[in-house]
Length: 437
Image 1 (cartoon, one colour):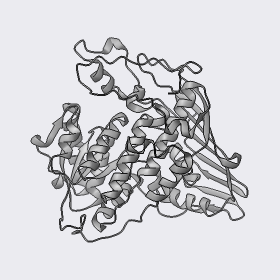
Image 2 (image 1 turned 90 degrees about the vertical axis):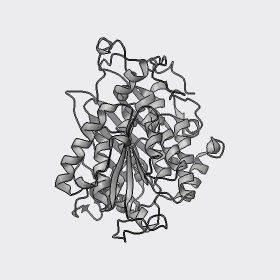
Image 3 (image 1 turned 45 degrees about the horizontal axis):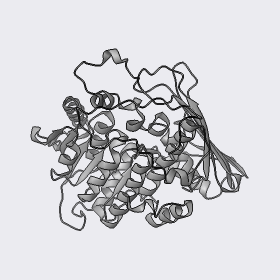
Image 4 (image 1 turned 90 degrees about the horizontal axis):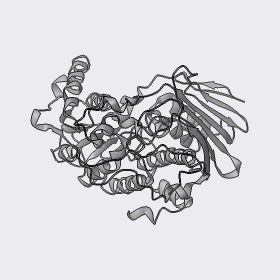
């Protein structure tokens, strides 16, 4: 990996982050004949990963721009196509984009190489919504082919994958391609205004952030007895991808990365120095190997701390909130409600509500039309790496530094995937015995 040697220190990571930039452009009404400097009114979109999130992203892309058409679908499993198209056509009747769904059977690609076939089908924009373990490879292929990209979170499940994403983000910037992350809270109006005030000193210097992601389980793993006799190891794991670390990254990485990202946002995207964590699994998971709870403490310069509690269990207290404590006040995002600040000047967001999922795509397509590409690559990679840092601190029981995570050689995603391959399920991590590689 080219930038593995270049990005070996926290200072250099910060320097690279500044170079790529992290600002989000405001949406704009722009002429429809500007596309990468060429006259082309119609933007062709390909969807890679046709599950629920992919279907939603495709609908948002079609809603973002009147001259967008959906022309290609790709998924490892053929049965995903029809539910995806049916949902889009039904929603499209209400929202006015049904006639712009131009997918033909010839452009529905199935298999492990479906992503490449979508990219090669003549699309201008790709939506990457497959399981996270595949994200680095899909992103690299899309950038190499010169496509604009919507990239769901998290962007990798191991550090080599994150380094690959950083390289792809750098290449996308050099090619003037737009790259928008699926870390959607950064596109929500109330949160944008809240963090703008926090960064402006509304609570003084931020000293502590505490975030919660306490919720129910996602995609439980069925027992091995339900596995069809003719189903190979790879297919079995991919069909239940959320339960395997190499595919999902763990519950904290795949779901609570949103809270990790808001911590990073609150800290002005400054990477932490190190982290310690505790975690484990209380609910039986049959053959899966992810934890269902992790609590992590991040340490920043000047003894600043950030904490994240994550749990996915039934019949337990639920909360998804953010608490920021500063030298001159307190800020809070109470779950899905409007943020508040209690300080010398009290504040509560009272502006318009933003559909953050739609806003991501509105800004992506506005940036393409304007010829002013946006690139979320650096901070989406950093937030993913912070999630991996928490996972590895919990899995190993060790204090993990930022440099150790950035330079970790643990490669979880198997190479040369094949439906007939033997793919053993890695054992559940055991703190004190599992090693940081």
